[in-house]
Amino acid sequence: MHVEPALASGGSTAGKYSTIPSGKRRFYGRVRQGLYQYLLMEPAIKAGNLQAPEIEDFFSMNIVKVKGGMPMKNCGFGGTCKTKEKRTSRWLDFKTATDLLAGAFRYDAGDVPDFLPGVKVIRAFAKKVTRMEEAINEGNVQEVQQLYAKSKLDLSRYLPLVELEPLDSQDYTHEWDTRPQVWCQGQFCV
View 1 (cartoon, rainbow, N blue to C red):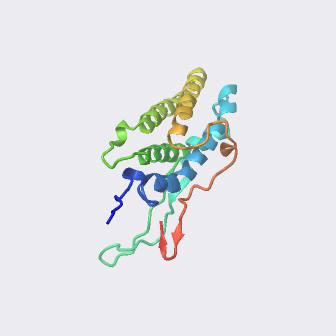
View 2 (cartoon, one colour):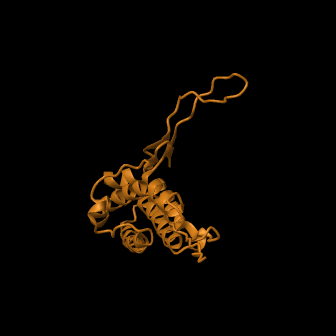
View 3 (cartoon, helix red, strand yellow):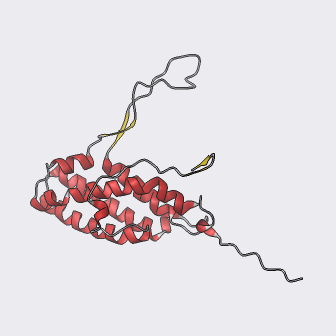
């Protein structure tokens, strides 16, 4: 009797509910929306208009993460508790989503995210954009323009590492749905 050997792949590519596909479903919309809004700032930055609405929209705390005044479950001791509103900016959401997406592109559970190429590149990008935000608040047009150009180079290195289209793609010319994608098979959804 001839027995065929069992073959299986390991790492994060083993199975359709593993790290990379899950990361794509959860973070691609948020990353693409962040890229769209980041690129919208470019004409204003090149023109030296640091008060442009596109720049304000990117850095303002205008995204509601938790709606305030909603009743909370398990409040304790029969009290009536309400949620407090929590907000974030497109920049902070983009920073988090790009880092988490880069961390999802690992091929072994033992890989430390800090050492992954995509994580290193996007964290270098984040440092530049954080400094760029400070320079915007200081009104330093020249520094903002330099940091934007340098951070854009980081993004162009990051995108292929997470299987996204290049910066000049039509993908970043319109808004994106930032909600995680849900896939269902029968009663099972991820």
